[in-house]
Length: 261
Image (cartoon, rainbow, N blue to C red; front, side):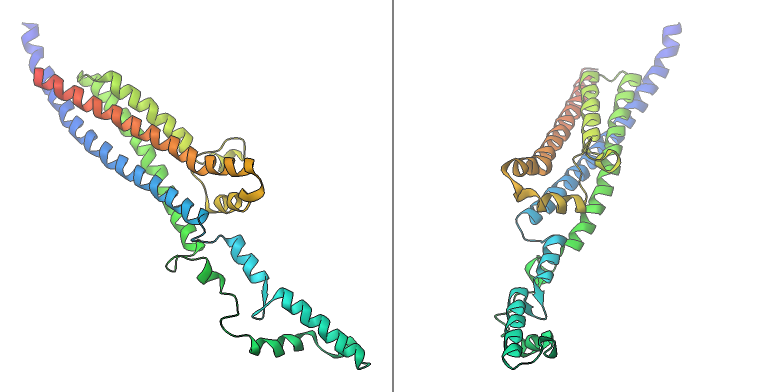
């Protein structure tokens, strides 16, 4: 008698859990697509800077410091020395001839082809400078933190639904949750809080420019540079894909159980 009374309640609870299962599965796939897209954008941004298609702020400042009045700084120094020699031969103080006179007399003779190209044209890709890339990286980081956190919470919700509704696949969804949790912990930019003690896979534009400028200091720095921005990213990508594969096995296990029932 009691068994017949509790059975309709159990069936209704199971049906509710199945409805939640469909919602969780849809959001899980949607968040996975956003997270993997953000990770790809971060890696593309890194390679744009690494291959030199987009120059960093340090490169632009170096180019501007090497050019004075449209003339390279080395030529300006030669002109100043020549002006001082002419003033000494004419028994005139060197201060009588302004140093800028040589610059003004040489600048009109410089052809447009002989002048160095501007930093913007040399360090931009289709008009995209490092400032635009920095804005893109900050935006992607914000979206990535939110979506990765929501992805872990969605996996946790799927685990609770499986436990409450006794849908099965607990082994797969539990593994998927812990893998996604490790992925989230390694992804967050802990270097902004703890400094160099703990480093996350995410990076800021200033950090990318700093590592890029120090990349040529030695073979060890080069290896560490690529491990930081490529190897770490690859580890996060593998953990994300492995978590998604486990969650897909959870979905298949539930569907097989429903077919048997």
